[in-house]
Picture 1: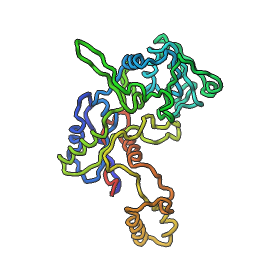
Picture 2: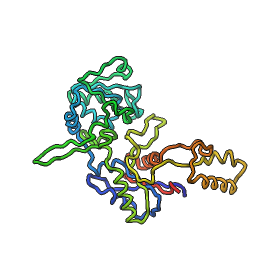
Picture 3: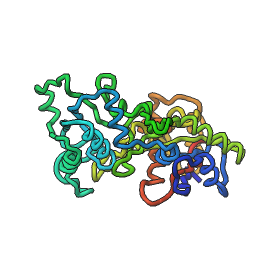
Picture 4: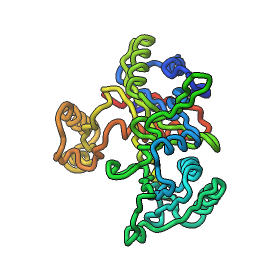
Length: 355
């Protein structure tokens, strides 16, 4: 049998749940092998960590950092799930917001103008209503017009709201907001908010009308804990990764399914690197086109053995293979397996992926 992928069911995960124990429990009754790969969706990790922030947490953060009361937002994702609660927080803090639109579609392929054919929502009007409800004005401008002559004043803060900012060191990005916790004191005790030191608000999702779930923290350590616990329980050495969005684009709707800042915020060391693969169909159609049956199988198998441990960069035998990282390829496989709906499979087991 070739590569085998199994979605593993788990209970609904809440804050302070023990992820390693839940993974071990989900694997019971399954025969495991060395080099199997366990995937854990980032969403349940963040939920177990209690990594949530409220709209008021964001407002408090912006107040402490002395953001201007007029915000210029560059190319936010036009998504209720991904950006509406962030916009609500910005609107609650600011007096006026200007959104810059880059082209007809946002970074993920959602339309910047008109009604979204999938959701039936005019997102521009939806965002206007959010700002209006917070007593904040909202205007739109094309990025082209903005760069053609608009001058940012001292009373304005420019925020790059793209999911994958190209120059984060040159301006404020979503990764710079909620990258540290803000604390509230009550009866002499401090209660910190959630945060993500590396990504801030990037990769966040709407939890309810006042709460965002952030991207998880400390993912590498968690992967090692799961790896160790499986070794102790089952006596096998598996690799473990936490996965977010895969890296694929819908050819019909045009949506690029990659709104998280990275595909794998944590993984064990055995998942580092990229595949070193030959292109079997190329060899079958060229070098060994005169062979068939057992002779062809034998020749191809020998090519596979010869390729092991060698670099195939520049080799024609690897032409057409995709030079991506293991974790990026696996994240797409796992994301498609677990889905985002009703499957209740936040853990994924992949077998026979590695020799």
